Image (tube, rainbow, N blue to C red; front, side, top):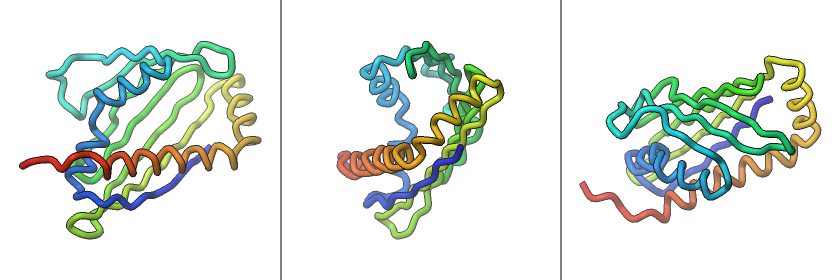
Length: 155
């Protein structure tokens, strides 16, 4: 299952990259939504070696997953990999400077089932593909608007 969208953000690429690598704020947001998040390592762990264990409820079942940064090419791209409950996923986030104060953010998310139970879950998600695509685009757009609203970073 594949999702893809892009947003143009009225901020320099360095500011957008700082927003997409603000892992502390992502952890706090996940915890507010009831996700149990544990960072693997500590604050001294290099950015490109960050990883997390996450536990959450989805469709009435407890799910666990491990999320790792697979590659990091500051300030242009970051790729995450996730695995858990018979499913693997990849999220590629690419930033492209289209003007000195304007950045295009492209996000691609792919889910691949590895077990029969995960295949059934993905199949049920495919039945709601249009709704999920709309929600995915909405969340990426919401993130872009929040990144625009952040105070300008001082050099």
